[in-house]
Image (cartoon, rainbow, N blue to C red; front, side, top):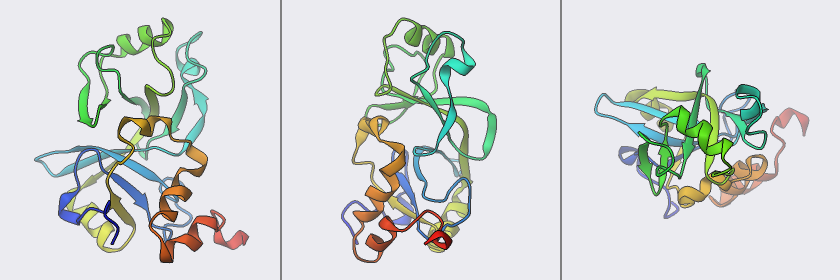
Length: 192
């Protein structure tokens, strides 16, 4: 087992879930990397898919600002809501700390002003339509069924710089041995 892998009991805010290659034909989770943003006492887990960009940007929501800020598919829950992860809590008040200089949420008016005044770039904030959510027992079952691989977020807040199209491949390859072959396989193995 790699040093950066986490035991099931240790899932926590800031860790990553890598979709196992066995998750095929799932539009949300096939080859997904999810940043866990919340693990609370009610045993609810919330996260955002970091590598599934949509064809929309922030400018589509707020005209005139933010065409460089692509909106990502955060998951299947509350798709009509916009969420954001950032590393600029000094500019976005009421942000919730995840870990390692990463925050989510905060005052939306601060987000709009920060982008309007060019005080943030794509290395500072990432937007999501929807989120991913589980109960602790759900995620435990999915990990036991080998749907997810839990790892540390060794990128810290630089995860906001990750390039979506190769992110999963690069991370799955680092697991070595049985996973290397999957890093080069097509997204749909039937197209091989």
